[in-house]
Image (cartoon, rainbow, N blue to C red; front, side, top):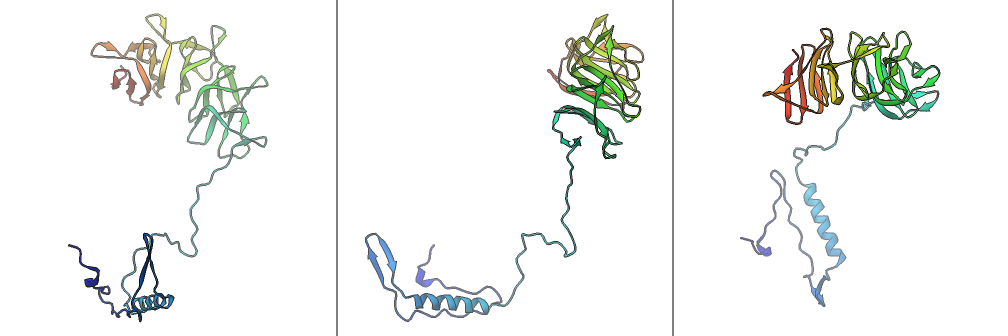
Length: 291
C-alpha cells in the first residue's frame, strides 16, 4: 500500500550518518495557470536543498566501490592488435576472385581480379601472377594446393596443374583436348588430383599432363555438388548418377546407397585418410566407409 507523501521518511545508507534536510523558510505556493502547475518557490530555496543534499552525502562513510564497467590496462601495457597486410603484386592491391588455398608452409594459390596469384606468405615479394606461355591466367573455379607445393586450379584457359617449388605449370588434357573445370577440385599429398570437368570426372598426376576419366560401367561420371580425395587415393564424389566412392589405385568405383537406394549429393562432403566419409545428400546427411 502506498504511503502518503507526508509520512515517507528518508534514511541514509547503512553505516552513514544522516543529516536532516532544512525546511524551506517559506511555504511553497503553487499557482495554476490553465492545466499546468508551476512552483513559485525561490531559487534560494532550491540552493538550500541542493546544499543540504551535498552535506548529507559528504557525511556518509565510504563503503565498497561499485564494480567498474571499464577495462584497465597497466601503464606499460599496450592493447593487442591483429595485423594484416594487403596482398600486392607490382604495387597493385589485389581483390579476391574465385578459388584459393594455402598449405601449412605458407605456399598459396589464389584467384584475384587481376589474375591467379601464387607465392609464399613467408617470403616477401614472392607473389607472382600465374602464366602459361606468357598469358596471365584468370580463375574460373576452385583451386587446391598440397604440402609439397603442388597445385591444381580451374582457369579461363582450362584446368592447370603446377609445382611452386620447380615453377612447372601446365594445362591438363584428355585425348588432346583441354579440360575446363566443373564442380569440385582436389589434390592430395601423393600429387594425385581429382576434378570435375565439362567432360566428366577426371584424375591424374600433377607431374603428368594427361588425365583419365573416372567411369562406372564404362560410362563417364559427370560431377555434381562436391568431391574429396584422401592421401590413400580413395575418393568420394557427387555425380549426376548419385554419390560415388572408389579407389584410384585399384581402379574401383561404386555407387553409395542407403537401404538399397542411390543418394544424390547436396552441399559438400568430407573424406578422411582412413576412408571414412560424411556427405550431404538430398535424403539427409550420411556417413560411410570407402570399400
